[in-house]
Image 1 (tube, one colour):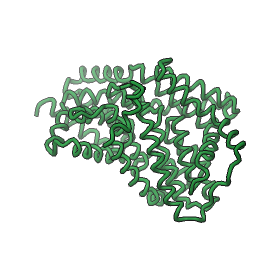
Image 2: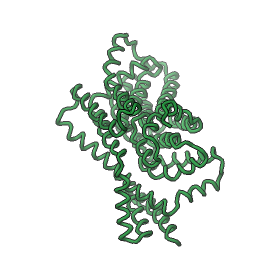
Image 3: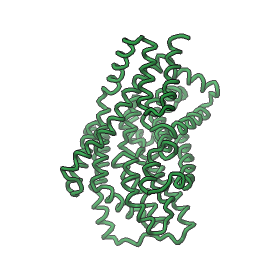
Image 4: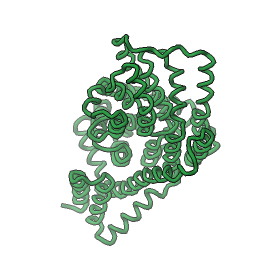
Length: 434
């Protein structure tokens, strides 16, 4: 067996072996990659090159946006912003059938768009909307499923840390990815709203939110405008060239902190736990980026992407079949792996394949993220599923039954986004970002 084949074997067997032993994904990737590196270069050179690759992987100015966007999201989750966005969502969709559940969907999309975190959205919005829906006669499992299914929309609507990670491994524009996520993210929320509408039509006993006077509507929207303005400030500033995405993340922190102090929902003594929470999240993400850089070197050395491409082309050289095959693989991967390591591991493998038959890397990035967003609500790993069930104090298996219609509809929407590239590329092209 030659050196490259041995390194590939150690990497693949090592990753799956460590995962079966219960090791965290970052540890499994890091140790397996380092062992493969040592087998290829010897102990001293292998360890030295592994350390260099880790440093090179995180030594990127764009990655500074991740800790700041994470911090901004944690501040928003504690800063009274969620309640104002829920009230704004109620004004927007409150008269639709299943109005409280529709409000839940809209609030998740708005909060996710501001915070960039599906887990933060499902916890913040679910803890408020769940009891309200139960009081109005909604099935608790359906209410939890609605909250869980709609929360990942915020991972597609910018700012999104997952898009920053994909930009790093694909060398695509962060600004273009941010803008490309708007229409697919809105379509995700609309898909959930359609399922809620169909559910509510069969249950006429569910109340529609009482009519809200024009003055109350105006006051509610005005109250939420400072929170919503964060989207305009961050994305608008990036598109107009006033600041980079990394600088925008710093502005998001300052803006959200100032707003939380104005709302008097965050005090100085709250800053320590907020900083510790965001630091823990950031450390996990950055460590994953670092160890994935070692794995990227090993995969390149062992020619793993070329082997995967050859294997896939041996099945079919039809672009449609290959896209569907990749979608199935990513759906399965999303069931067992968090989105960040999945992007770091599989984007370098699949991106050259899809680009070989003309798929735009920005479009593929949105499709991959959409795929992995579905994975966050799918067992056995789905973090949004577990947090949403915990917030609702329900068993996972009960919630999953109510999630099935959402899951089917979102997979259909994934295919729509996949095979209509202009849903992702129209806005970037209009803004001259492609």
